[in-house]
Image (cartoon, helix red, strand yellow):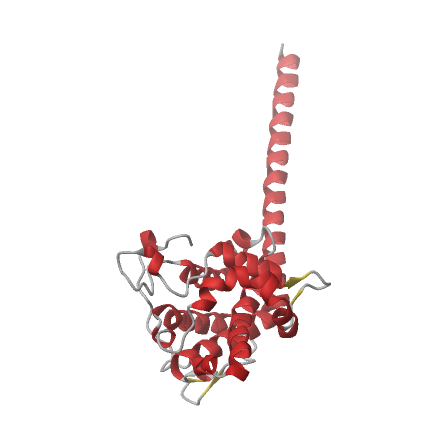
Length: 262
């Protein structure tokens, strides 16, 4: 009986050890896969950091020009009208395009969860949400259909997909290509937004004021090599001009239940 008991005990111990090893390997493999995914997300962000930074800087500059420098007056100048309009829409499209390239089809949650990419992902999410929310810039506070300068998430995604050129590595369309394709491919997604751009009401838009603030935050997160950011000897941001504290408005307050189809 003692020998049999010893055999049984040995078998139980061996089984337990085998289970521990198996579960330990599963846990190790899980951690390793998670680390690999996080590393892939960080590497992908680093790969596209500069073009995304350029797009954010370009859009921030144009938004500031609209809000503070009378840029939309060019919409009333026949020989400049189309370039002024399409140039503005192109800057939005570039940001959507590089965001689409960065995230791909399935990477959004990975970027939002990894600590090294989360701040950029949060900034991009907030920008997308702001553009889609229907509680900002209403002409009639009681009527959500009167909101202005809104670009729904579906429209943002469609524009981003159209901007993506599947080369190796992927890139965005040039302005020339965007302008030539605009009427046929992009205008259905930009139609409402484009029609609402005017020099009288757009400069006072709360949405654009908040967008400028969020873009300034995105640039600060992206510009780890200080490509566009410059500060004076007291640490005060002086470049880019559009992102200076004096140029950036306070946040627009929108509650989670007011975010509409974001």
